[in-house]
Image 1 (cartoon, rainbow, N blue to C red):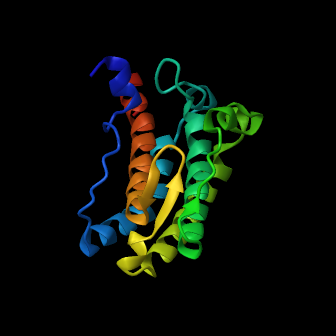
Image 2 (cartoon, rainbow, N blue to C red):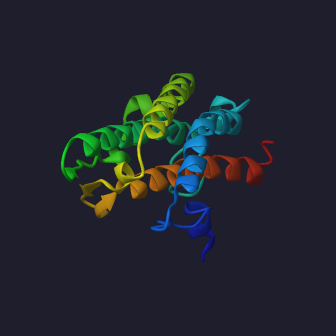
Image 3 (cartoon, helix red, strand yellow):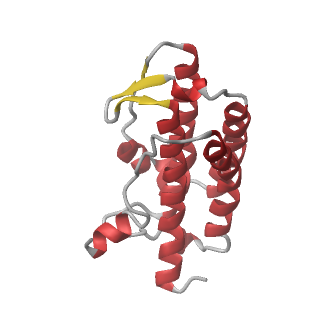
Length: 178
């Protein structure tokens, strides 16, 4: 793996585990609840200059990543709810790169997105705790993923949070901002 690839995918690419069991789902649900604390710790004490530093050459700034997480997870949460209430929901995909270039993502205060992410992840946890094993087998269609189960969706958003938090913690480590 090249250095840029390692910086872009510090945890590697997402890999779905189709053999997920109830215990693994419960572990993921607990993890959803601690992602906000991990994100907050990852950015704790960073200056505006540090927040405006890309995590890799050609990548988003830390600030953009912080704003991206609740935006993306909000879309995921809505997809989850739609997949639970529609047969094979057809997801719409946002242009996340364009969203990251909007002024609120480039320059907005991160405190708002940290709080939004905290509350949103609590909603994910509440919703996920109410699901039965068959609920996780419900499907939705996504333009990039094809037809996938809610197990896939839950695993992918857990990876997504870990992935972006690793972008920030990796940058802090490389820059000595510990």
